[in-house]
Length: 221
Image (cartoon, rainbow, N blue to C red; front, side):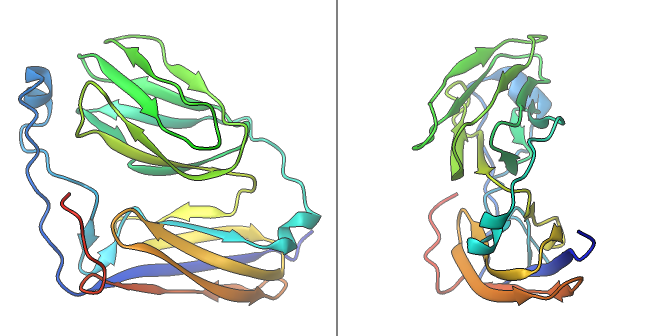
């Protein structure tokens, strides 16, 4: 419509940040060769900036719109015996392509509550696994039964207004129609925060969040 807005921001963390742990990949010697010093990634913090937080909007303002399913695919890759990316979003009906880029067998096993569960293995040079989700759902855990340290989270959205914070904690949501929304940020270790915002036509809005790691009991990771 020409009056769309943009939301940008940074996800910050204060408090005591535990160091990532080394991962024992001895169960698969190929993984040891590919990633000999692998560490956990469930809490990635760089200068108190949080990576892999999923940020999205929700609200009745979006009910006035319908959003086309994108022709492009979203790729989830098994690379160096890890899921890459660790957190991602896909639209309802959009193709999710799961690729095995390693010279070993991987397993892909999402455990959704609102969408059908599936469990597939793929060897080296196998064709990609292509799936779609038919219902919105945040956020679906993905595991690898072959390699239990491999984890990822996939959000299935019915609109395109979402983002994942980068290595500097930054996110950007573009093309948002003006209206009143709830802006939500989710992280697997630190939990969820949300704030109500009203977006004016063409506005560039900044919205930062801060998690306190000392107030949120962190499970081993």
